[in-house]
Image (cartoon, rainbow, N blue to C red; front, side):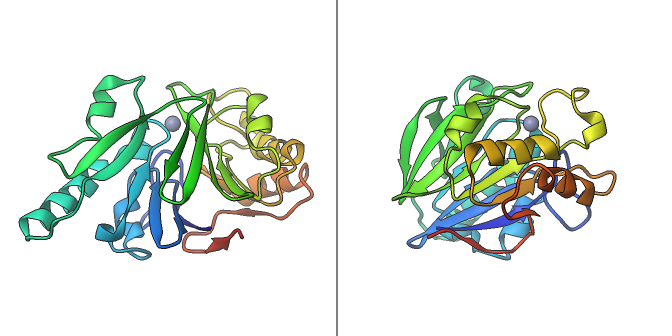
Length: 245
Ligand SMILES: [Zn+2]
């Protein structure tokens, strides 16, 4: 498996960048994880849009879905240009029917329902889901091929169940949206120390931090995680290729 950060920000993107998103690939299959603001632009540095095989969205906040409409327009423009393509599956939960229905568009994209506890095959990946704690229904996800896995927490505050869900993973990609001074004051997100604690308790082999705040010095978040977790830890780097095999 290869996974590439497309964007790293929570809420909205800095200039010329994108909100937290990842491209995961295996055996020529390309799956985009979350599609918020700036993602469609950044993504084209790593894969032509028509080569996307699937999209998974964790939840329906704008910083995770803002560019879905533009992605759908790219498909319909391609269609009008005479290029036939099968509908692109976009996996999202069905707890919010209005937003779920927007995943389907003119036979170009089709929404596919996912839920807490589901295990689905997406191309070469076995993907399982675990509900997080966030102001809206949100799903963490685990992509597995054979014995290897990559776990993404999506947006969440601390939840004990995520330790079991991430247990033994090769790569934990955790949100870390809060500075330590904001711990407990902003619902729905974790601080660096909590991401580090999750990696430690889950025995993750590597930790990458994402969904970072636009204010302050994000290296403080890295330090807070590294103070708890002994394994390799870094801030997600856009365009860097992480190989798990
Ligand atoms: Zn959110």
